Image (cartoon, rainbow, N blue to C red; front, side, top):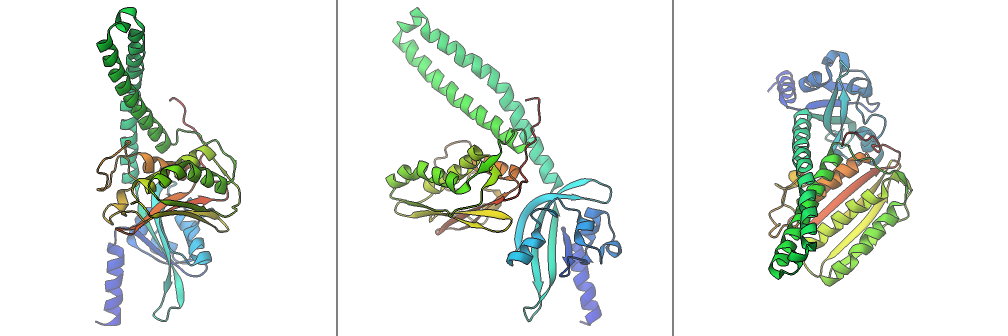
Length: 361
């Protein structure tokens, strides 16, 4: 195949890929721009090439958490970062971004690659799902409160107190009502978190201290299963965060690690700090998560195949992702079946936390 035909074939392949692909030089100026990138941004390739990427892509991550800066500063590829691109018409488009450096056959740096996926449809489906959950849970809450209140009144009636069988029935109904009310409350909180309807109580927070608290809370349970639970968090820069909600995230990850780890294994928690963010690693030696399940592990109500006796509603990791997202961070997992998993939480050091609360709840 001639060089010209080979170049045309490569261009055909790149333009056929259903995601935006943009390459940049060392100064972050655009060197190539595929058809999907044109559709996403509204700019033609000849308008974009030679321009600074932030002028064309106009991403919400250009100022803080730029994936290209991460690749440049730490020689680490980034994957699955969510943000927004503002197109030529001023429309905000939710996207998922990945970035990596490009090297030639001699392993010499030649530029950067950014892959941008339009996730508008996915976000719309998520909103519809969350609105449905909220509607159902909200409509169930009031009658449940009424039922539980009426049961309490009946229990105190003299004629009922003298009837042991009725009292046993009341106890069963009351416990079932409390479980259902707890379930409804969990659904409501998750829906509010996903829709940004819960205001974070931001204050200067010592992440290492919160980690230690969450670890100590689960230490006894770990010891009962002969699991070594260690927290090797170093002294970290204090950041603006909601301490209670971060504690909930850390606690949920540790709780899952204990739940899915065999006896006589180890769960370790460690931290790393960069110029722009704090990274927290939760590593276990559990049964692991199958590669086919990893893309869905943070979805609401999703349960892995190892959930033989599921507890809760399958909202723990989904709520954790929503909380970390509101802080401007990300949560991800790497896993090998039979060897364990590593959950990684990334928190920005310089305020990108979402503090807005939507009223009318």
